[in-house]
Image 1 (cartoon, rainbow, N blue to C red):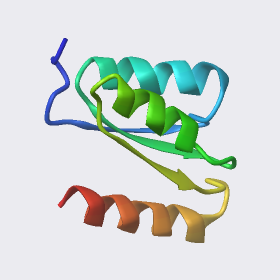
Image 2 (image 1 turned 90 degrees about the vertical axis):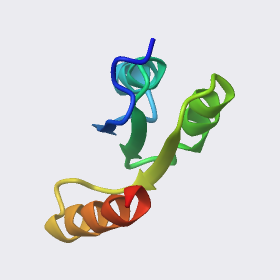
Image 3 (image 1 turned 90 degrees about the horizontal axis):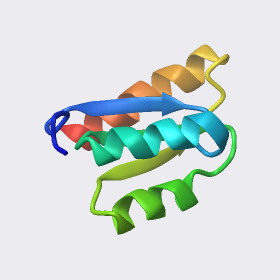
Image 4 (image 1 turned 30 degrees about the vertical axis):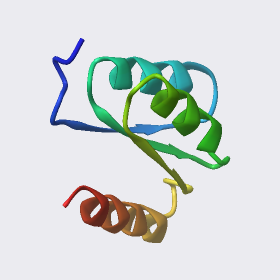
Length: 80
């Protein structure tokens, strides 16, 4: 499916559990996925890319305003 093609989805808690499943589903629907977690999300990114999707990971504590600012800047640059 590609109903989300051209869109970017930022998923927090995406390295494990429900967040991981959600990130993979969004990628399967065509979205480029920003995998955000306190843990490294490289494994999820690899799975998404293996299945033909686009993704990148970012380690961040979203309760920290500076981390959220850095995250936003990173992804704004990455998708421009």
